[in-house]
Image 1 (cartoon, rainbow, N blue to C red):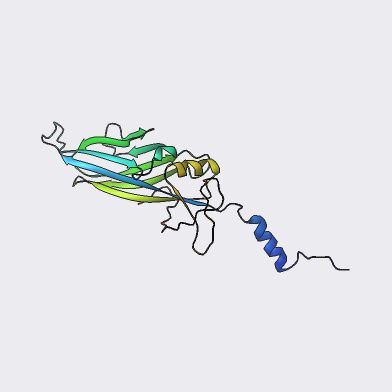
Image 2: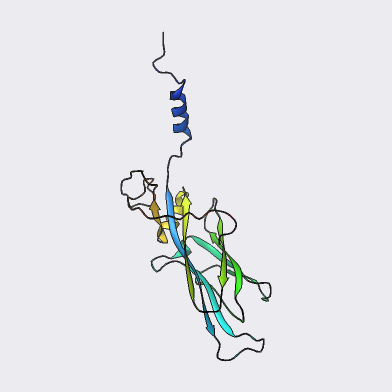
Length: 193
């Protein structure tokens, strides 16, 4: 007597793959803008500072990043009296005066109970005018709560090339929309240039 089915050979491997496959494959992408404005002062300060500047983190015009951003930490040069500036609500910005450009680290902390909890960027502030840098953040399989926050901030759900999906309007859907966009994956490493 032979059993009705066998779990040996390739059938077992296929069953294992099905068991270990994530139930809900979902990739969510959201845009961040990092930038600065620098302006020559009419009068040099007593410390010799020649410029007023502001550095900021924000969403694009259609996005409100406060839905998923817990805080933004600006780590300025050690020569500043308070070199670590924390912004817990918008606008996420620091305004200062100076006479030279600086390299700083910007940490964006997320309202996420799981990893990633933050993303770090290196940012070069120069005093030769304004600058805007766009970053596309990619989150693979974010939890339901964090995914809702991302969608509220203007994020889009995407899927890999070659996969088919039906359009769904709900951020809770495990099926991403059919809109395809070019992606540039941002890793969870401590720093990003």
